[in-house]
Each structure stands twice: as C-alpha cells, then as structure tokens.
Image (cartoon, rainbow, N blue to C red; front, side):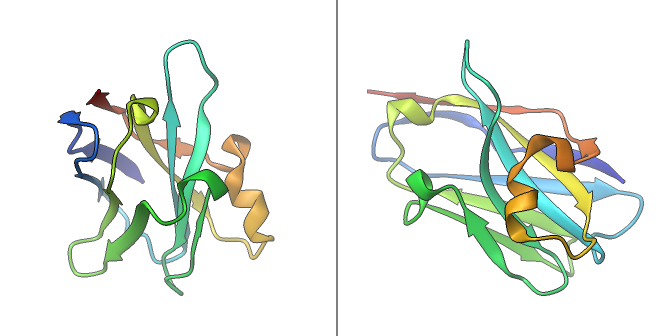
Length: 127
C-alpha cells in the first residue's frame, strides 16, 4: 500500500479544511487508516483512526467534535474534515495504514502500529 495525503493549506482560525488520503495499489479493506500530526518541535501525535471494513472511528479526546474522519469506498479515499480550526492545529498531517489484526482500538492510537505512511501535508492556521 502506498499512501498520499493532500488538502492542506493556510486557513484562518475558525475555518475548515478537508484532508484526503488516497492509495495506489491495494485497497484498504483489511486495514485501519489513521491520521497523525506533528507540530514543530513536538512529537507526532494521534488524531483519528477509521477501520475500513466496519467504518468504526476513534479520535484523540482533545479533537472530538471538531474533526471527523470518514472514508469513500468507491474512491478508496480517507478524509479528515477539520472544523473550527485553531492556531494550535498547525502541523504537518500524515495518513498511515496498519493491517487490521483485531487488536484493541487503543492499539491503533500508537505510531508503532502503522507500517505504511504517506508524505505529510502542511496545515497552517493563522490567528
């Protein structure tokens, strides 16, 4: 699986962006797809995950209510809708894939679970 994330940009605080993550090669049917982000000088942190076959989603507690992860089976694309953006959301956003091996959902909050990463897309939120 190869992943490509795009859709980042510059937005004012309170605005919205939608990121996309597409694949070339295999489909996502047996995978969990995650979004992570990394701000300057900080560790890469978990944002959200979607289990492709079930559509179940999980979020970082701090982002619930503002971010929504979804998928389009026909387009084989994952999305991250980000609303009410804040300057602290500024980061490079990455999508990643991990085989869905039936582990606890919390396992998929960890970077080490994922073995395939896309290139990042920069999101900058101005105040």
